[in-house]
Image 1 (cartoon, chains in turn cyan, purple):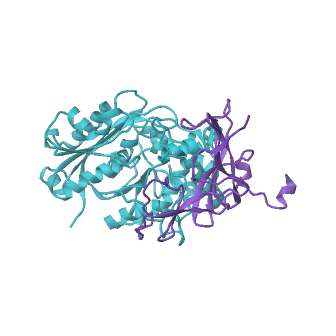
Image 2 (cartoon, rainbow over the protein chains, first blue to last red):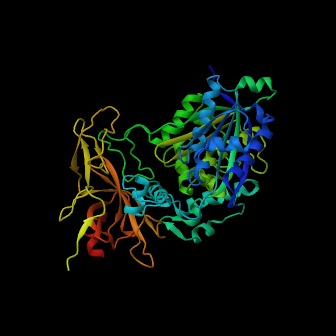
Image 3 (cartoon, rainbow over the protein chains, first blue to last red):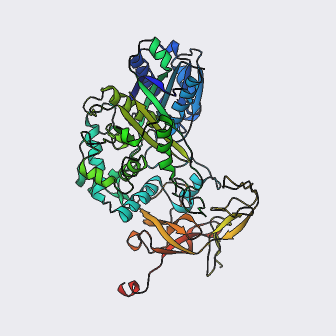
Length: 395
Length: 154
């Protein structure tokens, strides 16, 4: 039995710091996705909203909020939260209902309005909450975790600050023509290295910002797509939302320690297992992948993901980068959208934005940033507290 | 006047001349967890192959190898408690202990990223994190172990 569903339409609201309610962005993206699909809102029978945790009650019930704002149409609703992996979990929820034959057309929406500066925990004293304790006891910010991973690449694989800067240079170039990107300006290695160090070895321009933005996807059964004249649609071939397998031996934000690995490290790290599950589900391997959108919370993290996706061996991502393989026109372009480097992170929207970009890439509609002949694309992302996120799309 | 000095969090580390982190150990399979759950909380073993629910405190090795390290060059947001104005950067390290856990911590006062390397030895010390109405509150930190020979160079 095929486990594929059709991507009938995608839509986004441009990323930025617009200061508007998240609902406005979400409805904008949803209407764009519906228009792109040619499906009427009244035909949508399931709405999944990606929860946003910093926008009050409306954010906690995002599925209801978006359905109501679009005008109640009687659709069933769900709300998903998986931190940065929220979009993938929402997409998986929609896919599961379609594959079960319980729904035909699902609308998945994620939108956020973000605060300034470092993302910090909500107020109050919570001595059993690791996300609170890491700030209180250690002053451990998100960039500090990214910096630990970056430093390991330097000390183990010989990565340099120039390599990390080159990731930013590449992504900045990729995003220049992307109408949804927040930052559309060329950046030089000197710009990155000249920016302030936030957490050694990462500079300010190595680290992604937080943004407002929204993304939406209309999914349908392959049957519905056929009946409604959607010819050769992009298909979701796999959605991986796996959790870690004990023991998780790589320290994960926001935790203070790893699991206890009495018998040594497992065969795959958590991040490796995320992509592996997607490949297995789709029956597609890393060699088949033409394009990838990965979660570059930092420049160095993009290099980690390239290896976690199996696009090269461990410790060799810098070789790909330096050879131009991950640039548009290269062997395996990574983040043709410009990535988080050009977008900044809008948490519940981000994993869906990756799907939007790959849909445009596989349709040949990514004007100014098109990866020629792309037929298979994969996304990768990870949310706090063990949320894997990888979506495999093909056409 | 007496100055009191108490851990910023109870039950996570011992103090004195030979301080140690205190994990919880599953009495069924021996799996360690750090930080330990609060004593009054239920503790379900993290090992998926074990259904143990009782645990006991277990002191961890004092020295380990640096897994990675960084620093904070900007003041972290609350609930971090700043102790200096202006803010003074501090280093952070993740240290792999012989038991098979990697534990994060701040790096001991006076040491920065230039004193650290992946794979280098570090040992646990206890230092003051901040002061509140009850006095000084302490925390575990990782201190680089300067090897013989290198010491002479400094």
